[in-house]
Amino acid sequence: PASDTPLAAPALAAILHEVFGYPAFRGPQAEIVAHAAAGGDGLVLMPTGGGKSLCYQVPAIARHRAGRGVTIVVSPLIALMHDQVGALDEAGVPAAFLNSTLDSTEAARIERAMLAGELVLVYVAPERLSTPRMQAQLDAMAAAGRLSMFAIDEAHCVSQWGHDFREDYLALSMLAERHPGVPRLALTATADAHTRADILERLALQDARVFLSSFDRPNIAYRVVEKDEPRKQLLAWLRAEHEGEAGIVYCQSRKKVEDTATWLSAEGIPALPYHAGLDAGMRQRHQDRFLREEGLVMVATIAFGMGIDKPDVRFVAHLDLPKNIEAYYQETGRSGRDGEPAEAWMAYGLADVVQQRRMIDESPADETFKRLQRDKLDALLALAEATDCRRVRLLRYFDEGSTPCQPGLQQLCDNCRQPPATWDGTEAARKLLSTLLRIQQHARDTGRGARAYGAGHVIDILRGKRSDKVAQTGHDQLSTWAIGAELAETQWRSVLRQLIALGHVLVEGEYQTLAPSESARAVLRGEVALHLRQAAEAVRGRPKAGGG
Ligand code: ADP
Ligand code: ZN
Image (cartoon, rainbow, N blue to C red; front, top):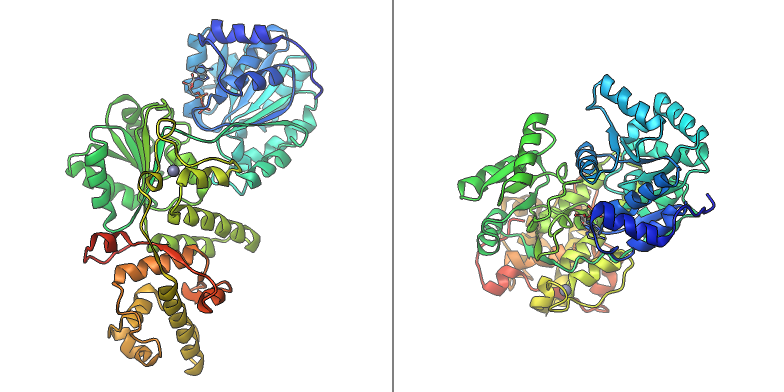
C-alpha cells in the first residue's frame, strides 16, 4: 500500500520512552518503525536478540493512536504469544492473543474487543488466521477501518527451503489479495538469499522494503572440534568452560537426547531432556525449569528453542551436525542474547557427514529439493572444515562481508584464537581417490556391481589391514593395497571427511557408496594442491581411532 503519514518520528521515539522505557532505538529500528508506522510494507531481517518485536509494536501503538485500529501479529509459537502479551500488558498496552489455549468465553470476549478496535495488538496463530470465522472478522474490521497492519513473525516459516517450514504459513499469501490496503511487515532472524527471495514471493512482498541488519553476533565464540568421543569431549569442555552455566545441547535423535541428559546428570551436570516424544506436561515443566532455574543444561532435539527468550544461555553445543548453516545460525543464536560472552560448540565427524547425506537421499522429496539440501549441507561442511575465520564464513553465507574476529570487538572463533595446523594432503588424497577408482574397476571386472564399501573398508585397504571383508572381496589384490600405511586410521578418516566436504568424494545411492567426483580428476592428476586440516588426534599423537 502507498504510505500514509499518521505520526512523525518524534512521536515514535516518545512511544519508545513512555511505553517501553528505552532511551533510543537500536540499529535499524528507527528506520523500520518509521517506515511501518507510515504504512509501508517491509521485510525485516535481524538476528535473534536484535529487537524485532519493537519494530512492529511501536508502529502498532502509533497507528492505533492515529485511529487506524488493530495490528494483527501472526506468530507460530503459543509460548511466545503469552510472553509478549504479558509484557505488553505490563507496559499498559491493550493486547491479547487468540489461540487454542483459550476457552470459548474468553475467545469471544477478545474477539469483541478486537472488532471494536479496542485492542492495539492481537497475536494470532497462522492456522487460526485462515479460518472462515477469522476471515469474516478481518473483513468486518477492514470495512470499519479498524484493521491497521499485519506483522508476520518468524516469516521464514513460509519457505519450504527453510528448516522451519509450516504449511499454515502458505495461506498468508492471501493477506495481500484480500486486504491490499493493509500494510504488512514480515520479520525473521534467519534467511539466506534463497529463503529471502522465497519469503518475498510467497508473502507477495516483492515491492516491500527490505531491512537487512548485520547478522554478526559479536559476543558468540564459534568453535568446532573433531569428534573423537563426543560425550567425553562435551563433558570436559563443560567442566573447563561452563561450570554452573545454562546452555543447550542439541542432539539428532530422541534416544540420544535421553541418554546424554541422563549421562550428564550422573556426571554431576544438571541436565534435562526435551524432545517431541515427551508428553506435553513434561516438556512444559522442563522448559519452565530451564527458564527459571540457574545453571541447567537442556539436552534437546531441534524441537526445543524457537521462541525461547532466555537471555543468559551461555553456550549452545551440537553433538550432531545441524541440517544447514541457517539452522546452525538459528540454534547457536539462542546463546548470549544478553550480549555477554557465549560459546557455540560443535563436535563433528565423518559419520555425521555420511548420515546427513543419507537423510537427504532417503527423504521423499523431489530431486530439485534434494539438490538444494545437498548444496546447503555442503556449505555447512565447508564451515566446519574451514581453517580460516568461522565468523567470516558464517556471515558470507548471509551475503555479509566481514573481517576476521577482532579481539575486544568480538569473541574470537577457534581458528582466529589459534590457527589450525594444516598439512599438504595432496598425496594422501590421490592415494585415497585411486583406491576408490580401483574398487570401482574391480567391481566391474568381477561383475559384482556396486557394493557397500564403507570408510572402514577403504581405509583397511589403504593401510593393508587384512579384515574378513578384505578376504571376501579380494581387495588385497588391488594395486593400491597398503600404499597408505604411513597414516593412522584417524588420519585417513580425517582425509576422507575433508574430501567429502570439499566435494571430491561423493556418497551415493542406497549403499552410500564412496565414489570420486568430477572434481577428483584434477586432484588425481596433481593439478590441485590440498591443504588439509591436521587431524586433532594426530596432533596430540593419541592412538584412539575416531569413531565419528
Ligand atoms: P528478537 O525478537 O529480535 O530476538 P526481541 O524483540 O526479543 O529480539 O528483543 C531482544 C531484547 O532486546 C529484548 O529484551 C528487548 O526488550 C531488547 N530491546 C529491543 N530493542 C531495544 C532498544 N531499542 N533499547 C533497549 N532494549 C531493546
Ligand atoms: Zn574468527
